Amino acid sequence: MNKIESLSSILAIPTVELIDDAYALYQEKTLELVYCNPVFIEWFNIQQPGSLLDETIVSLQKETLFKRLDKRGYYNISIDPGSENKNIPALIEIKFQRTQWQGINYLSASARDMSILKENEMFIDSHSKMIEESNRKLSKKTSKLEESNQQLESLSKKLAKYLSPEVYNSIFTGEKEVNLETQRKKLTVFFSDIHGFTALTDTMEAESLATLLNSYLKEMAEVAARYGGTLDKFIGDAIMIFFGDPKSRGEKQDALACVMMAIEMRERLKYLREKWINQGISEPLHIRIGINTGYCTVGNFGSENRMDYTIIGGQVNLASRLEAQADTDQILVSHETFALVQDCIICESKGEISVKGVAHQVKTYQVIGINHEAEILNTIESMWVDKYDGFSMQVDLKRIDKLRVIESLHRTIQQIQGYTGIVDTAPKQD
Image (cartoon, rainbow, N blue to C red; front, side, top):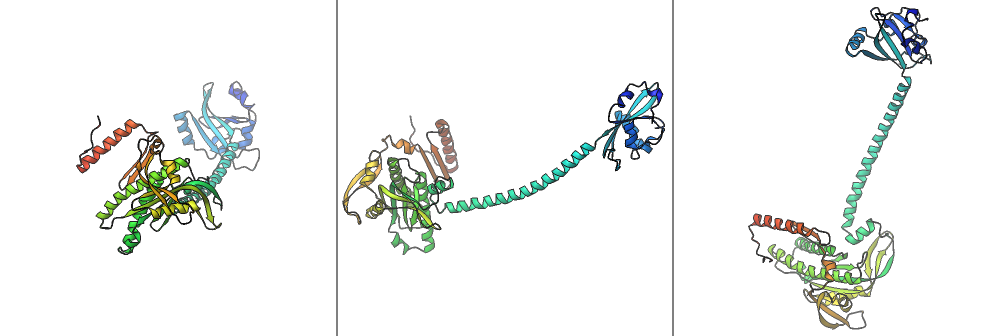
């Protein structure tokens, strides 16, 4: 089709001959085709001049076209020619606008090939569906993984109850491998038992006795944890703890922590006795404690399928013998332990005793209390935890803002006093 000569002076016409887009002009009133370039002819299958717009583009709504032109000045429409001709795009976008020449109104139709965009949209849509499906699968796997993690976490918490916190942490942090291996280390070993516990079993019901024993062991285990002791095992009413493995602060600090733990256990039992008496348990419970320091074999014993992390050796037996030799509420230590703690702990010599399995006499000392003037105590006492029913406090003097802590403690004391009506009778500091 040849363009109409009278339109050749319109500046836009020559440029559309040089571009790939399709272009056409229609009479505004009659909507008759007055010009189109070769691309428009091919894309819309123009057969003759004067074709009407709604014949060229059958999906066009004339009423909508003019409403949009009046409102916005342009109108866009996308169509799918549905042609099998590869030269005709699968998606065409047409933009209509009003134009004027020599006082005559025309509608221009600029058509662009949007098939690449359509292919991209189809590609994106396809990949979006693939991503959505992958996300669904990933979500299911994540959900299962979270469920497995929760099960493992629950299981690990249950297993932790069967292990000393020190051993549990060293295993789950990867510091220790779970292999059948042992080593020789200098440890401080602690034994304790309840004096007269066997006789007590004959006077109490099994359920009440179990409650009493579990209450006692729980309190003692918490004290041991505060001082970093490795809780080896409970043997009925007896407790075995050692210091120096899997972590050690040095043999002197390990021995000092062990003795201070023993002193706190003895003090803690005073509180428990009052509590038990109020619960109707008339027979007061007392403990005996033995502590020894020396080289032991420590590690995993047993088989590949069942192993126990513990210590063995003559020094372990000596600590057990000291506990058996101790009097009621007495902490009996060997000379080796005494030599390490004598600067910080007040002790009294109890002479030499004969111990089964030891060829020589064993020097023993009774622990009286803590020497609070000893400077080395600062390394032990800079951090402590106090916890019992309805109350928990953890303090690290090396890290806290002391003034803020004092403020907080005063505020807490005032609130407790207001709630209970108890007046602070402690002497005021000048």
